[in-house]
Amino acid sequence: MRHASGTRRNSILAWLLAAVVVVAVAVGAWLWSASATAARGLALAPDLGPATPAVASGEVVTLPGGDATAASVQLSEVLYGAAPVVALATPDSLAEASAATAGLAIPLLVAPADGEGTELVAELERLGTIAVARIGASPPTGIDVTDVRLAHLKRSGSPAVTPHVLVATEEERDVAEAILSPVGGVAEVAVEDPRGAVDVIRAIAENPDSALVVMGDFDPDYQWKLETVLTGVELPGGGQLAAPGKLYVALYGHPGSAVLGVLGEQGVEATVERARAHAAPYEALTDRTVVPALEIIATIASAGPGPDGNYSAEADISTLRPLVDAAAANGLYVVLDLQPGRTDFLTQAKLYEELLLEPHVGLALDPEWRLRPDQVHLRQIGSVDIDEVNEVSNWLADLVRENRLPQKVLILHSFRISMTPEIDRLDTSRDELAITMHVDGQGAQGAKQDTWRALHDYAPNMPFWGWKNFYDEDTPAMLTPEQTIAGVDPTPIFISYQ
Image (tube, rainbow, N blue to C red; front, top):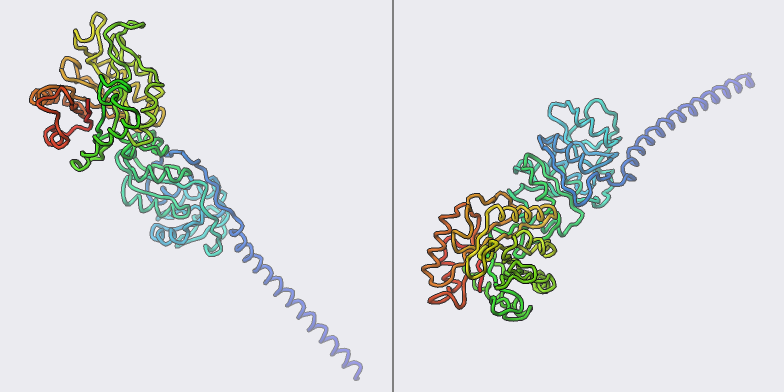
């Protein structure tokens, strides 16, 4: 009996042991499965690098914009080529999501209010997303993704490209800025002409890895203007717009020739300092940015026909280059003045394309010295057909646009209506240029004012105006800076001294 009982006892113990083993194996399997799932969720994100950017630095991208969902999808399409992990928010939780995802370099998408999410699903599929960190939002139906917690994601550093987004309204700015938080992007309301946005230009210049995105309904010309902004190049006085907002005070003449104006009365360094000295008194007289400048006669009207028969002596670029370079180094603007004789303005302008490709160099046309085939300087006062002026302005504007240059000053000198006939047909549509009629009258101050008013009446379509003070020819004396600002109305943007 004891033997039988022992056998039963052993059988029961064996069964209990087997049961314990089975339970242990089952519990172990469950624990392993749960921990493996958790491990997958935990390991999924930490080893993922930042999402792959789809836009290159230096690019300009235009987007149609829309509600928060559309904006988030459009920005994702631009900024990310692939993203295994994304964050998903609702419009109401966007601010919270923005703070939580700062610096993670992953897309932040906004689920639509109606829950449809067709465009959202398409974007998740394009990105190859396998995990979603949800902030108050559920993934749209139609896509299989795993949940992951933001706390498990490593901040992977700055993205390769930092987007700078321009939008039309403050509401759009707030949405875009929140969406850009993971990549440290910037959003702001666009100004009418981005070339005048000094802060934007400087921010981009300091960050060469920037890409510009314009979101919303903007003028088609906004694209090339933004590409110009991306160069980061600024004009003397700041920004990329030559006018308005600036007052240029210039010395006029030809290097090395005192007879042709005060610019040529001293060497390069002294000329720069003299230009600054002329400009300085104006700083207390105007709210505009005062810019010292040089107006350099590049082609000089001559008494004889010369070897080419055009009654104009064209200076070599090597003669002008020292002043042009010194101006660039010292924050001065330069205008190249053409006195073409019997040739045309465009032919001469093209001779100096190398210098006109410099951001700080503009152009001046002097019709007084534009002769007909039978005319001679000082016997007749020249004039220019308006079609010739338009030809030059369109060529120069194309040069600006094609080379992404800041706006250039284009001066049209005049002291008689007959010098610029049919001024009403002047093409002022090209905002690559700040077209300026410069009134060159000399002599009695009363007569100069009469000329100023007559030309204003004749050319009401002229965008900007200039005035010249003569040291020796003005009577009873040349105007002081205070008299120039107080007495010349409207205030010119370009004041030159000869």
